[in-house]
Image (cartoon, rainbow, N blue to C red; front, side, top):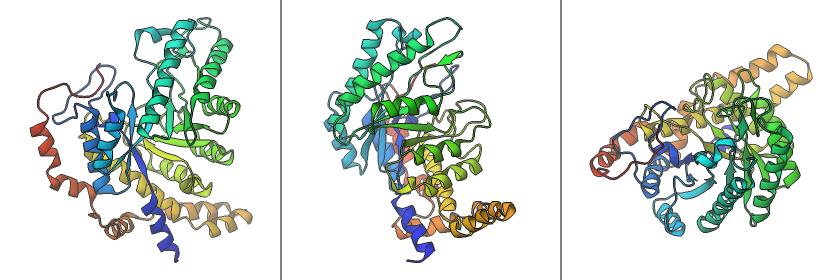
Length: 386
């Protein structure tokens, strides 16, 4: 197989999971802007997700968020997904919207609140059993706003105890993916603020516990690709939540703010064997003012472009320059790949997969946007209020 053929083959196997919440209404803490045609039920979210997969060919799974996607019959939801050509992916918990969680959830000083939070996480594992999902994704808004508000070490003990109970409930082939976030909504201490804290807890739990890297959850200037390389080296990178940030947790389309950073991250994934391993490539975005489905298609395409460039890096030439200590040549090898226009290559890949080479244009021409605007009238649109 030629080098180009190998790159094409790898691109055809790529899978990017889309998030159910990205199809609903979202916004800032000040305002959520409603859009016509937005799904009203998890079933309609899956219908939209199926369109993304139909035109990209690489978005076969959809992450659910509980309770936003709670239904009476999860097996029926899984069947509906299968009938649309997609599958249910990670189950995301929610321990940040109830009034009880004002001072935290699994780290709350009140044992009754902690019990409520853990019971919700166990419910999510039950849902995994019903849907056939592999991954339980955990993000905690737990933290403090003021020095002395709570015992920082005791909160870590509570977190460890909760994670251990949920970890023990996981079945064969199921994983716990622990996400971290620098700040927000907690402003003094966050209970899982960085990859080191997440890694320490996962290491204590066992091999089914992995770290999730959300690309928008870091301080300015953080070398995310170093974190990715380290977690891959340790066998603890469970997945990504791809999005972009200019200032904080902006949740913009992946690659929108810094496409070069996305390329650097994807190179470390390729270099570390993560592209062909169990690393989950998930989107975690909120499309507040742009049309939902085209934005998600564009995000998938952005990941594809960064991946294609990463796969095109001449690793032999790069290694030779590194061994020789040729700083400029090593950098030039990486930059040559980054500056390659891979759009023609991806058009070829899509055509070979039996897809339209231009997913955005194909979606706009299919009539789905007009159909959902006409049909999704009445009822309550999915989303979260502000």
